[in-house]
Amino acid sequence: QVQLVESGGGLVQAGGSLRLSCAASGIIFSINTLGWYRQAPGKQRELVAEITSGGSTRYADSVKGRFTISRDNAKNTGYLQMNSLKPEDTAVYYCNVKGLGPPPGVYWGQGTQVTISS
Image (cartoon, rainbow, N blue to C red):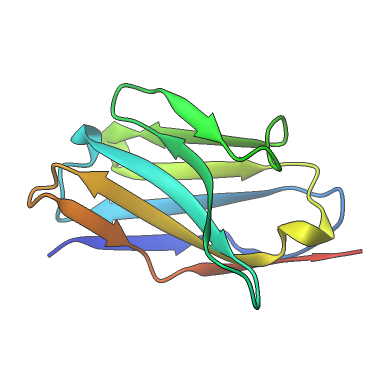
């Protein structure tokens, strides 16, 4: 059974930093793509950042230069370092793993709330 457990969310002031973690189990983490998504109230879920099994990354334009995605395959854990946070970054952040699994598929964590106060 694949499980993704996020942690690290919370309430911080604008300009502050947070680091989110995503601990994966029941899957060969290293061969899958890791992604972080977010969903703000009344908005669609959107991709924040993604890192492939080979280490290639991509970011939403709104977070480029402020957020960094990384992974530690030895620990089966992914990270999202978020700096220079803005009130518009407030959302529930979800960890996503997709690819070969096994079994092949798309997997989601339960989400962690990030709230940025102005």
